[in-house]
Amino acid sequence: MSEPEAGVEEREPDYRFTLANERTFLAWIRTALGLLAGGVAVDQLAASAANGSARIAVSLTCIGLSTALASGAYSRWRSIQRAMRRDESLPSFGLIRILAVGTIVIAVLAGSAIVFS
Image (cartoon, rainbow, N blue to C red; front, top):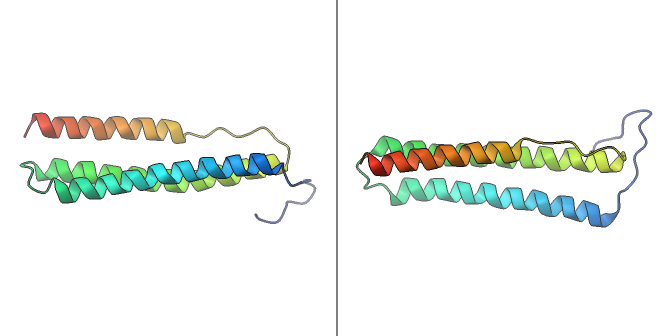
């Protein structure tokens, strides 16, 4: 953690909350790794597909979503840890919205690749 700001009192939160925050972070990282593996798998295993541009679009969307989730997970973990140390309300994040929209985009791209090939 960074140094506390002047005039802001921080205390060590209950370890159970810290561990729960860490487990949530690791779940987001597992999801990002799964998307990364999916992007690589689509690129490598669907190489014989007739529509190469759709394959590349699905792969790059998976990899881009993976990158966004991994970086967002760290930001989320750090902000929640800071809020717990300062006894503040927990901040809200758009990671779930990003994941939902990204999954819809991947499904539409993959579905259109199947239908139009």
